[in-house]
Image (spheres, rainbow, N blue to C red):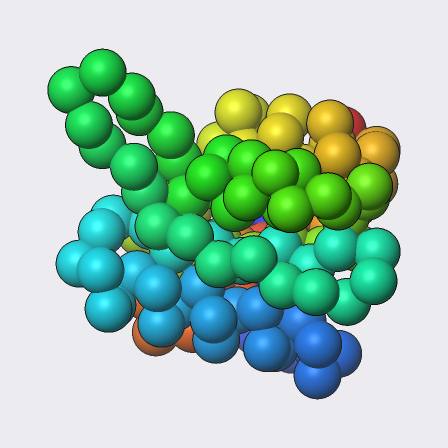
Length: 121
């Protein structure tokens, strides 16, 4: 669901938390995107964009990879803070791969305001 200026969405406190963590990662690391994912046990994984000469990963892809590397079996939700107006298809695919279809990917602007909530498809 893409949100307009007049849309008011009351977020679950755990969803607010991953948006805050994603926003913090973006600001702290000075990267274009920050992301956080929450696994099936409630653990969170926070990451920023990886932009090396030999390796490029979005913040969401990096956070999902960190979750997998730590033994996560599924995702409850993911969040990304970015200038983008809608989530990237590659990010939706990464969330779907671990969380399954319908796992929410929350997109917030740099100010932390939710722009979209999209189920991975």
